[in-house]
Amino acid sequence: MGNENKKAKKKRKGKSSGAAPTEVLGIDIGGTGMKAGVVDLVTGELVTERFRIPTPQPANPRNMAPVVAELVEHFGHRGLIGAAFPAIIKSGVVHSAANIDPKWLGTDAAALFGEAVGQEVVMLNDADAAGLAEVGFGAAKGVDGVVLVLTFGTGIGSGLFVDGELVPNTELGHLQLDGHADVEDWAAASARDREGLSWVEWAARVDRYLEHVCFLFSPDMVVIGGGASKSWPKFADRLEPRTTIVAATRRNNAGIIGAALYSLAQR
Ligand code: BGC
Image (cartoon, rainbow, N blue to C red):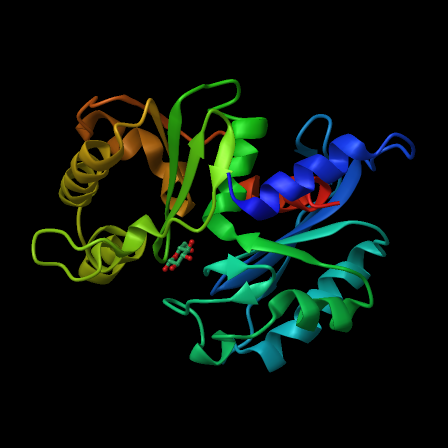
């Protein structure tokens, strides 16, 4: 568990009065869409319709901040806000830019969005958020040991958990494998579309990738999330059962739910 998380936990435990809010706004920021919804943190369900705005292009800080404000305004939300972002995030600052505009590098996204919405926004990596949703309410609920949540979309995101605690910003989509300098360019869901691969062809790549990460981490469970998880039945039987490998249950809403959950933990 990272220091940030430890501190957050201490703070939460130390709070003896003031009931924790149960409805929190979660925002999932991606390269093609920015989505939000109000999450009930007792059930892990969205209590509103999801609202989505296409990500403006170029997807740089200047263009995206007003969209975050629009999402918050749509729900008229005041209170806790958590936002998931497709990059390394440390204390709200963006530390990588694999699939986003390089202008984000070094930007304090939490401060920028916070200023745009006039309220505090707590930020974390998108795959870490998806993982928190699966560990809190979904496929990995109550699973001890090492759980790896992998999201297959434009890139490959990873959320690593040890006995339910997040090890943030693992970035396992950027491993080198079989001569591929960046494995996500070869095995993300976007590679299937880009190269016109069949499900069988693409699943063989995912399986090779899983072989590698299972060798490195010996996970007790792997949860497959991201856009590709919607098509789970099309490729599930092509994956060797190296460990328990399951589909994410929160699918498209996992980022929103996990971001909401995280903002409460940081309170
Ligand atoms: C980014 C990660 C992100 C993943 C999924 C990768 O390219 O480096 O931070 O979690 O894509 O969006």
